[in-house]
Image 1: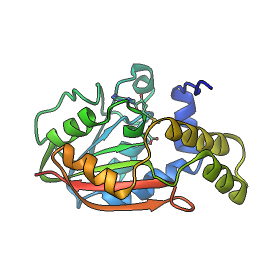
Image 2: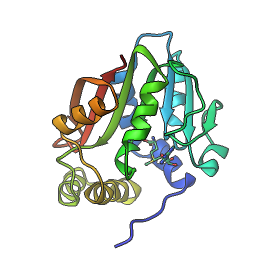
Image 3: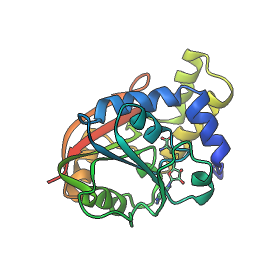
Image 4: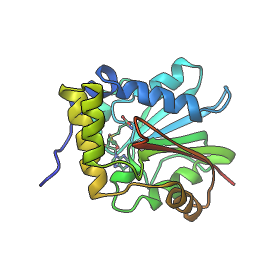
Length: 205
Ligand SMILES: C[S@@+](CC[C@H](N)C(=O)[O-])C[C@H]1O[C@@H](n2cnc3c(N)ncnc32)[C@H](O)[C@@H]1O
């Protein structure tokens, strides 16, 4: 079954009118360093993460390889860029994050390596992806339990279907992915119901 394509309006609605915005806000609260700091959001979509970071006093930039997505960005500072070729010098950021992006890529390693390159020594790289617990069955059960309908339900089930077709990382596999990008994972945790989403945090050498 082909998976649905998504456009700017879909992700804007998702980031601003469903619980996903709260998921992003909690992830940011977990991974943001102390201010002042420079934050890069790779695969930013409509740009909610850099908006939330900027509201808290960070210098925030979003990057995405979809020009249509960026043309209507919520955040003014955005770069049209492929995640594996970011237009920033080495060490330009104190935190590089990617939410709901790496698991979609056929090979996430070049993007993670690039995020590591643009992160200053001792800085942070943070990722949010489906965990090993994510599946269509688990997402359906959670959506039923929470009485989700409309876009919120559709999104969760789409995310699960995409995850089943691509990557779902457990702690060990995520630590290994970070290590292959030259990063040491310092923390990971699952969230969302029975732990359908995994956050990971690493330190740049
Ligand atoms: C599922 S959306 C996630 C948006 C946002 N990070 C969030 O969590 O709501 C994935 C985003 O990553 C972008 N993207 C996908 N592959 C990319 C790549 N190789 N380089 C840069 N951006 C990419 C897409 O254009 C899209 O905006």
